Length: 221
Image (spheres, rainbow, N blue to C red):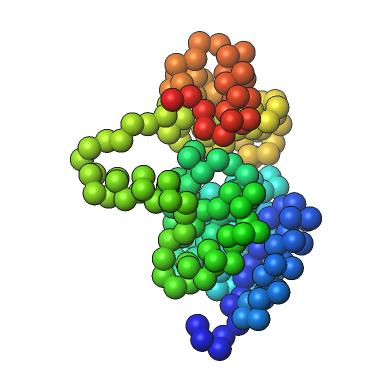
């Protein structure tokens, strides 16, 4: 990409964080932010109207999940790499994002130091994750028939994990339903499956564990 300006789309629903990220990228002589979006619909419009060469994506968006956009892009526009910037702990989310098609994962608190390096690394054809996550990914590739130890949370589907996190953030079933465009009944069914997979007997215990996981990032082992 010599002598070419790298166009970056930022998909992030926090205006202040988005602004800081934009200033950081635009300060690079060979990079520019070509668009900003705060949800899936505005991201889709921006991609269609002014296709970027890189997308920086937050997992938690207004009324939606960034993971949905990763899967969509991987299926329809696999040539546009996605770098995930998230407050969510990498030990829970990084592998899911990479499996869905993302090319990198950075914790938000590391963004200022790592995002430019990550963009360049990814556009050179590499994956950018922490050394810890890279070791886990390589071990899975080297020993595919030897299952690695998993946290109970690793057994949750993407949707179940999303609902589990929202429970930890204090969302009621009705608010979760509205945010994820689901029925309250469907949310309830997901909660029951989450309890089964996490070996939890009641709703109060589920809420306590979800809050604990939200605070600590990794959940039970």
